[in-house]
Length: 402
Image (cartoon, rainbow, N blue to C red; front, side, top):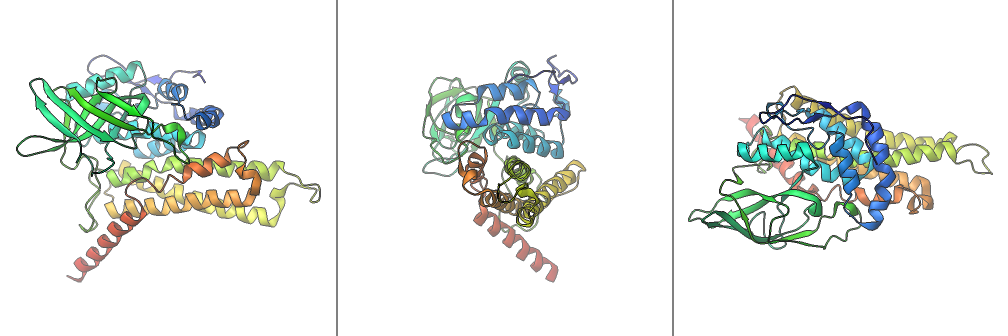
């Protein structure tokens, strides 16, 4: 898996390093390259090092770094297109990439300490530098069971996190923890992946998304510098339910929607398999391709309606953000619920249409079917999203009553 043409260099950042501008015209080739190895990574559950290196070489892992930092600063619509293309090739690799791309987007609205961020970008210019939030905990809310203790040299952090996507390959954990100060703070600590005191526990044995290696990670007295944190004041969190249809000021809910584009990409790959079968399968009794039959074409039409409307919905909201228009938090959540319902349904229809052949490990559809079951698992899950959307709609109605 190699890159035949380097991306175009963008303007240098303040420290002289360059972050590449990805050539989005090459996305189809990247999709094909990822698809070649997706099945093997799924079977072994190994971290997809070669695939991640490809994304780095193509400039995709830093595509969302802001122009003020010397990055390409791709917009929200282009981010959706990138994730859709990656998900169409390998859903696990796409999720690992998304976990790195989204923190760079959030940086522009909730700045990191400048020296710390420059250090990460300098590393990103040289090699794959994966980031991800370590937030979820086995027995507590975000950060609740993980404690950062003040030391003479900074902080020492102890706790356990679960569902840390890409755990084995992360350059930095964005670790949520509560400080032990007299007035505790919830903060995001930027922890180098190779720090002493980090243990990756191989607990990821899921139905799908196997190559994300989303293991549990134990942190025992892990030390970071005094300024290696992003103080929490709403960083990357959705609006509170019941607050009404407020603007999604941090773009958090919109980013949840845009991130679902990677699962839409997987559904498009399932659709590709349907179309391939429609053209190539010629039963002897029928004497012509199955794609010429009314039943097959009707099912193919249903799948296209589900996927094309989902894609339009994602790109419409991404376009609003690119134009600087406000997006209500509830609107973004509503769209996320609709998109995940429809893409999941489209894959189910694909499997039903192709029958037992779709469930064979000799083809990609079996893996895709398993992978998209994870689409609705990401927080906020559908029940929580519907609660927030419903509360916002009722609050809006009450406001209009005066």
